[in-house]
Structures are given as structure tokens and as C-alpha cells.
Length: 376
Image 1 (cartoon, helix red, strand yellow):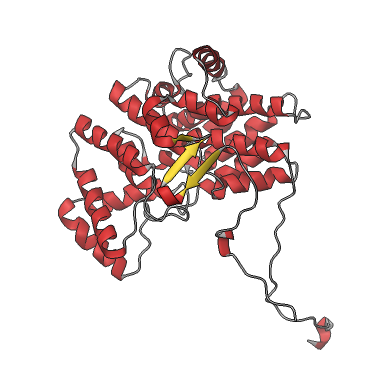
Image 2: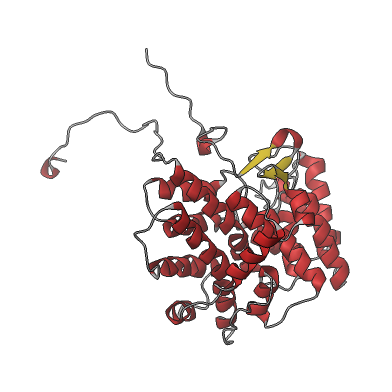
């Protein structure tokens, strides 16, 4: 007799391929990029170094880093047609929808779409790394009725992001905390958006289509959108004195509390301590401490009641808020960082491609005969 197959809902626990890019080690709560613990990379390297590592498998030399930074900075400007697409987007649209459309349009501007080799895709990856911050900044400005601010070639990626959004570079403390967040968000194995991107290109679709698929997946509140939901939750609570009761009621009502738990980590997300450290630095720098006080109470109550730890989205929400960034821009910032991981996985998938096509177990009716409409 045939036995029913084991169903792995959400592909939980299923290993579908190999990768050299990163590894989550739940047994020791560690995430490594190319063998390097992410917390060490965040504290020691700038995001540009980490982008090079994710694409090339090794950290760059000083000479390689200088050339990489110069190349990235030379690519930041957006075409007039692309700017017009962003300008004409509804100002009420979610920035992730605008970014998804902007990346798709940018893909149509590719002068050599027929080139699908690794070198061509690495070049496209660099283009996206350089231009996505400008795309985000353009919509940030346009929806406020402000003019576009062109990128500057004398700024780091973190500095340039604030420049294209606000027309100024904030204090070094803010830039550093933002740069750290980019490193922490850059890559995370076969997560939902990365697997989506790999699935798209496994049909031999193009890199831009894979990235657009990744953006669409990341938008959801069970993935990248969680950092936005966390800050909305903290603002809803508003007062540290209300935080514990709010969490107790949420748990009693079986309300989904965003920013907690993780499919892979069972004993805490290894990225959280670093991001929490820099969120605390932002609170000290701005003097606004109540948001992290609320977060700390929520975290302690969840751990006490359910033994569930926060994930990276939990400290990054208030950290970005303290940096003065609009809440619905948090997930686009995730894209700004994760474009490195997505494109690395796309290139890895295409280097040894197999069409991703899982099976399903049918649970519908058995075979039946079609009855003509007049006899139904």
C-alpha cells in the first residue's frame, strides 16, 4: 500500500540545496556570512566590505575595497524616465510597492538583457546596490512634495541614504548605527524572500525578476514588514507603564505579536544583541528613552510568559524611529541591505541550476464525470 507523504508545511525543516553564502547555526545561535560571525562583521567592517564578502566569498583588501566603493558611487544616479515613474507613483502607495515597480522598470532599461553570464549578473547586482537607495530617497521626497536630491559620490552608502532622503548627513553616531543595521540585514540563508528569488530565476528568468519577487515576498508582515509592525505596536502602547498589561492581554487574546520568534532560531536571534546595542546608543544620543523602555518590558514579558525571544526586527524598529526615518520606509531599507544576499543567491542558483518545482498532495474530490450544464 502506498503511504501518504510527509507534508512539510512551509517547507519547515526541508533542505533543498547547498549554499556557500551564509549559515544559520541554531545550536549556538550564530549567523555567519562566508564563515564570519555577523556580529563581528557589524562591529569591525562597513557595509560595503560585507557586500563584497557576500558576493565574492572573502573580505576585500584595502585596494579592492577602494575600487569597489568608487565603482558603486559612480552608479548611483537614476535616469530621468525612472525618476518620472517614481514621481508619478501614488503618494499614498506603500514604498515597497513603489520600489518593486521601480526595480522592474530599471530592469527594462538594461541595455544588454541577452547577457546572462555571471559577470553580467554581478554588474547588474552592483547597479541595484547603488541605485536602490536613490529610488527609496526619491519617493521619500516626492510624496512629501519635495524635490529629488541627487546622490553624492563622496559619501558612504549609509551617509548617502540620509542625504537623498533629508538633504543632510546626520551625526556619526546615527550613520554608524544605520550601517550596522545594513550588515545585520544583508543576508540570512534560504528565508522566504531569498527562496522566492531563487525560485523565480530557476526557470531561467532574469535577475531583475528574481529581485522583484524577493521584494514582493519581503513586504509581508511575517517577513520584512515585521519591523514596521513592531514600531506601530510600540507607538500604540505609548507608555512603559502600560507595556506589561498590553502584552499580557495580547497573549491572552492570542494576538499575533510581531518581532518575536523565528523559524530557525530557537534560543534567540544572534543579530539581536548587536542591533539592541545600537538602538540603545540611539536612545542615549536622542534622549528619547521611553520607546526602548517599552520594548524592554515587552521582551521581558514575552520571555517570562512564553519563553519566546525577539528577532532582529524587534530592536531595529525603534532604532530606525530614533534615527528619524518614516516607519513605512523600514522595509525598503531591508531591501537596500538584502539586495546583496538576494543577488548572491540568484547567481549561485544559476551557476548550478535546477528548476524548483515541488510536489503537492492532492486532497480534492476523486475523479468524476462532467455533467452537461443543462442537466446540472
